[in-house]
Image (cartoon, rainbow, N blue to C red; front, top):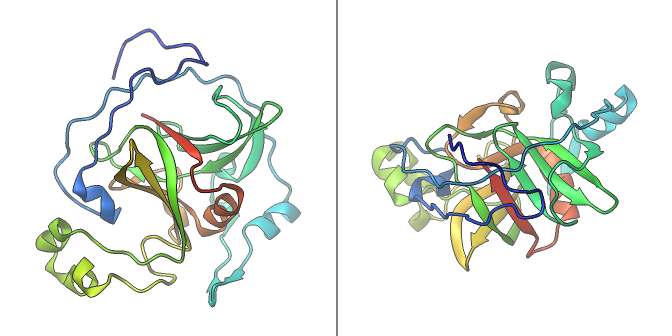
Length: 237
């Protein structure tokens, strides 16, 4: 971990690095860890985290019919309440409209006007697989296909039926990318890093995947509807 003096809230990321290991494209890889970028982080401010009411949570995390699929309800009572989707005081100092992923805290923020942000709980990549830096949401996809990279297929031959050459895995409830995917580019290049949905609600708040940021399907749908293409994104490590 870097011991550099933190930068000010308004001058974050004077240095951002791009690590685009091919393992990240699958969001489920087991490649060996690669060297990590050095990223300066902003110290987080005190946040209030009012818990949504049970009535609100029943709506937020209830079943959803979407794209021909019935997304099951999330048993939110079994999730740490701090990972519920909720509006909080913005701790990032970033301009409104920016997405900030705070990987150590397992939060994703969408900064809003007036000093607030929408906060979502996320699951992140295991140590050694995470990417950090800045970029933009270059592309958005509803019910995306999952295409494991050839390197992953070589290690796990059982995935050959989902290879790029064969068109990937069909969209659906068991697809690793879930109901939505947001594709991050930096300096015009695909980082192979995604924000995506997942039916694995137990993974929220944990480091279990191999690089990509996963949200509950209900939350990724909410985020998808709030952000346009070219939305700026900053990932803290």
